[in-house]
Length: 344
Image (tube, rainbow, N blue to C red; front, side):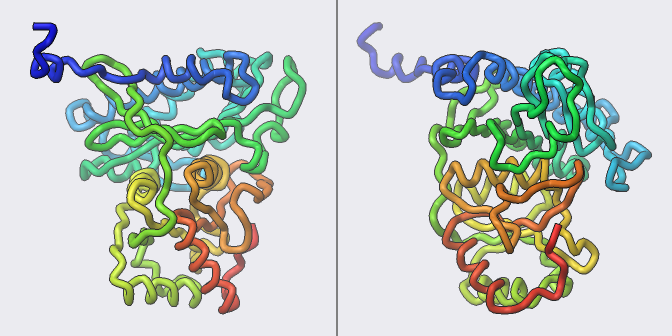
């Protein structure tokens, strides 16, 4: 039996678990003292619970709207609230986070863990309105080291940091399979969830975004509200017969382009002259990821990771994806003056 190759193929190794990967690579993490490793484990644990809730949403009556608005005046979905509670509890109880900013909270959440070194910015459930139609959604998170002294109450100084100061970032994609994609500044790695074992396994090591692509992701219904330079670039994409792919889940659209090559765009519009996506927990973490994978992220006027936030829920335009596609878009934008106020 030991020499039977057919039998050997039936028991191929599962691979490296997230926990083992973190343990093996902890020495490569910035400030490798164990707290960051535990924090990543806490996020992974919460994502498993949220994954379960999403899979049961239609049966547990937690799909649909909640009947309240979030900090941006947007109607909350029931699962927005559920995901926010699950991640907040995991981060508070894990003990490694002193403060949280969330899309679903008006103000900074002070965890009471004042001896902790890290702050987290999180969008607990990106694209949650897609739940009702069974389209992929996600979680986006960003981790910073606090600025104020340990054992003091954290302040806005700790959370309002430019993206270049991130020590880790990532997203969870709840789709046909659930994936956790993370970076700690040493490349990008993807882990796929095996629900029967309750473990994330390394499935996509050292992810790299193609230098160029033929996919563009944008809300085409807003075409008439875009700057002429953006309209011209979109006309170019159509002339090249690029594929238009957009489902309104930033995580899902970004993940596709990360694997296949492409560009995601959410420009300034007449309704949102400062952009729509939030800098701290949408733009910054994705920009950190894409740069670690070899791509680029710009607001149209500057590198996303260089932008200095001034308030928790600040918005920004973003153009993110394959390096050559972002370069070409910037060339179009440089040719035609903006008619919208891009300053944030």
